[in-house]
Every structure is written in C-alpha cells, then in structure tokens.
Length: 442
Ligand code: NAD
Image (cartoon, rainbow, N blue to C red; front, top):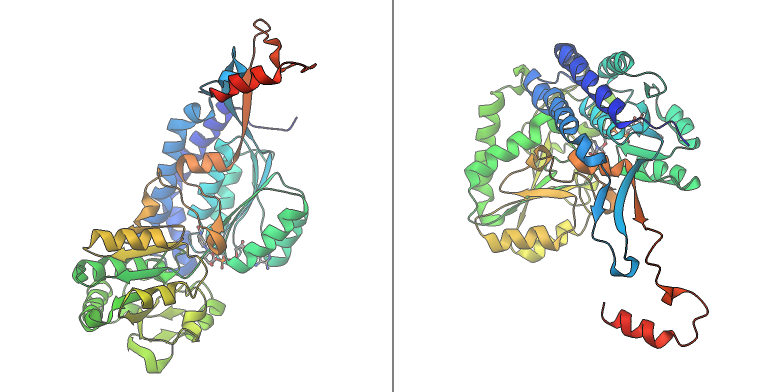
C-alpha cells in the first residue's frame, strides 16, 4: 500500500491550487518578467491562463476520469462484468525546463495530482524568480507529503534521479532526456520525456503567403523563439522565397517596430550561456534581417538567415531562439532530403492551399504534432495529445492524456461463483475438438 491521494482530496487540492494561482496571477507575471522580460500578454496566454484553464478542465472531469470504466465482457469470460480501473503510480518526480517555467511545472503537477500521485517537483534553476513563486504556491496548497518543490541544477537533479521513483516526467533537452531515461531504466521506472527537435515549416507553392508570414512571425518570436514547438526553419518553394521574405520582414516590423529592442512585446534570452550559443549561430554573411544583439541585456533581434548550409551551426541542432533560417526547395525530393536529415521533430507545420499536398506532408513524416496553415496552436486544445516521438520524446499529456500518463490502468474481471463452465479445466481429454469449435466462432 502506498500513500495515494483519494479522489475527493485530489479535487479539493486542485481547487485550492486554482484559487491560490488566481490570487498570485500578477506576482507570477512579474516573476516571468524578471526572469527574461516575458511580456505580460504572453505570460497570460501561455502561462497563467493556460494553467488556470487546465485546472478548471481537470476539476470538472476528475470524477469521470477516475471512475472505473466498464467495457464489454469477453464472451470467453461470461458470466462476468469487466472494467478498467485506474490507480496512481505512487511517488513521482517532475523535472521542468526554464522556457515556460510556470506552465511546464504546473501542468504536469496538476495531471500527477489528478492521478492521485504524490509529487516532487524540480523546476529549472535558470528561471529563478518563477521557481520561487512556484515554491510559494505549492507550499500554500500542499502538505509536504503530497507535493514538494526542490531546487538545484544538473548535479542535484542527477542525485534525485539515482533514487527510486514510481514515475518520472521530464521536460527538457534531448541530451538530458537520455540521462533521465538511463537513470529510470535502472529501476524500470516508467517515464514521459517531453523533448525538442528541429521543427520544419513547409510553405507550398500557392500558399497564402501573407497569412503564413503573420502566423509564423507570431509562432517563431513568441517567447523570443524559446519554445519547443516553434518553427525551427522555413522550407519555401524557391519561386516564392523573395516575396515571402519581404512579407516576413514587413510583419516583423509591424509586430515589434523598427527596433525590436525597444519593444515591450519581445522577450529576452534566459541567460548568457544561451545568448552566446545563439550568437554563434548568426553568420553575418547569411543575415537578411536583424542579427543585432546586446549581451548585457541578453537581447537578440528577430533574425532571418538566408540559405544556411545544413552543416552550419544554426542547422545542427534545435535553435531555441529568435533566429529563423529560410531554405528554399524546388520539389518534394528537396523537402524530403532536408527533413529526413534530422531526427523526428516535435512539430511540423505546412502552409498550403493544396489539401492533398498538406495531407501528404503530415502523414509521410513522423513528428509529435502540428498544424496545417498555422503553427503552435495544437497546444491550445486539451483534447489533443501533446508529446514527441523518437528523439522528440515519448508519452504525451494535456487534458485527459495527462491524467492517463500519470495513472496505471488495471484490467479487472468480476465473476459470480455460479455458471462455471467445466470445459477449460484439466483433464483435457476429448475437450480439444469442442474448444476448437467454440473458439472458431469468435
Ligand atoms: P535542460 O534539459 O537543460 O534542463 C531541463 C531540466 O533538467 C532542468 O530542470 C535542469 O536543471 C535539469 N538538468 C540540466 N542538465 C542536467 C543534467 N546534466 N543532468 C540532470 N539534470 C539536468 O533543458 P532547458 O534548457 O531547461 O530547456 C530547453 C529544452 O527543453 C529544449 O530542448 C526544448 O525543446 C525542451 N522543451 C521541451 C518541451 C516539450 O514539451 N516537449 C517544452 C519546453 C522545452
């Protein structure tokens, strides 16, 4: 027996969490602003409101999700009634990154508590101020036996990973994801890995370039490009590149002004190490817009790079910053060559008026999730699973998918003691022909 949390208690805790977050909304927004100048509008839609809406959805559905689900019984088991029961895994470890530091700690916490687990939550040390407010909120809502926040960097996280957990939920980079998976394997602990990747954004000939430019600029430069599902690079039909680049430039200026450094709607890079990593990706010979930066304020302007080589720094790994490479293609073979050069991405986007082409792109490639004629908004629907495949991760969450990730499903058959069919019992002499006949009907 483990110290699982009852359904009534889970619901009460989630309600308390909701009220506490609502009371602290402006403090959360201020912490995010202190960490990387996250614009309050973006904090509202991608962090506080997102978490509040997740909480409301979970509270409204938890009774239904936790109820044993009756399934059609197998004819082989009759008379019987058959069910799927859900049970908590037990003690879970949640490790979070810095880029959506409130949402990516709170949403897994909500799902884990909904599943009845007890939680140790390890936020990223890099978003220090948000980690503090997360701690304050968790301490106000939960008893230490239910959920607790712990702090530290790589070494500390590795010491946590040495312990035995009943479930590990990790969001972060592919390289650390491998460390987590290895540590979990030692104890056969199940894991969800929410990782990253190089997300292609394909623009078909004849696509609505104006709307594509608007939506891509929003998706790419939100959070200063520090979003796991942001378009990583553009693949554009060679004939349309010139027009499209002009539209991108126009939209960037419309959104952030002539000097984005002065815009209050554009975030900063989380720390100097990441700023330097991004800086090294900007080859001045390839810059067609932006390329401006300020180390002290960790600013990098929205930057467009023209046709960088696939082996160049910017095309090696996930960019995770406000740099957008534009690559042109002539035919589908070119698209295939580039996309298949990389591991399976977390998302893929295609802008097209040709339904067949768009459908082909989303079916021939393997990726976490995506959109046709938009980007990032797959995130907004709790009825869609959110998670990667291959190197972009394993498992999924959001809405009921989160509850399911944090719950073990038990198949249960309930039998009465009457109506016992003797056919299955030994000795089997003369029974095989009857059982074969019976099973051949099923
Ligand atoms: P990261 O992997 O460096 O850190 C994530 C967490 O792991 C942090 O809490 C950190 O303290 C810990 N950590 C760091 N190095 C470690 C080590 N050597 N051993 C053990 N633990 C370690 O990731 P990050 O820089 O915080 O976040 C950016 C990455 O996260 C990007 O790759 C991005 O794509 C990915 N991400 C994925 C999702 C998703 O939902 N799939 C969401 C956001 C970010």
